[in-house]
Image 1 (tube, rainbow, N blue to C red):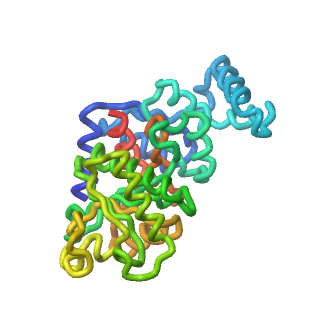
Image 2: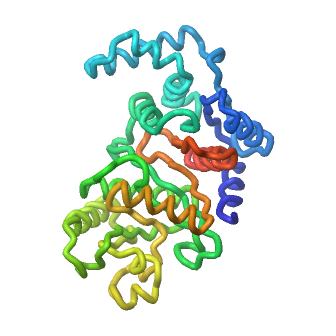
Image 3: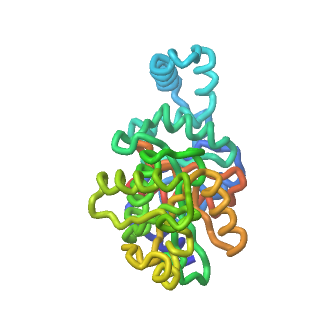
Length: 309
């Protein structure tokens, strides 16, 4: 819980306005109350009645004119903007909110599409992916049990370039939110060619592309999980690795591995999993799990607020 407490404390240092458009979800309603009461952020539980008709019409026209070549008609666009999700995403894009948190009652695809089309993608990164902050109790690995796992929710089979961008954006979040130096491991079931892995070339290329983006970054791959996070194993399997078995940012080779990895860690160790936190959007956004708790909404809002500081 130390990591969670630090995140909430950091969010309080510079209050940011966060949109919560799932106004009729009881978990979000309660979370908004606590967030405002404790001064974690300025959370707005945004209802349909809060939409301005003129602004709504403007957003509809802007959206339709931008995406009409993607086989969306004006009636379908109007239907989208009946939902506060799209309206608040446009507001966030314009700086009327500092960040957006949703997903408790929307699918990930709904949330990601709204963020991608209304808020837009950071041109440095060019893709949207996701990560989880994992807070593992009684764990000596990572940073006393603190890790960032990516991508666990968006890109099914990332190519080398996408893997490099996932790692880059996860590293930025690690520095900004956790105030930690990112130590990045590209994971595999092989360590430095110990098995014939078809993804090895992809990981080696991703590592090279990452170092072009951020020359001073601390990263290595391909590594098995134990070689990435256990110093004693790293000394045996990859003694020349700059990570020395102390990785705190774990980049999974595909979505299956990432999704299984975070859920396995969460359920079997009692870890807190904060996320999915969307990476690569122009403004900070969090895509809640539909199984989220009130605490999850609070903590994802706190992370989103810190990213906006």
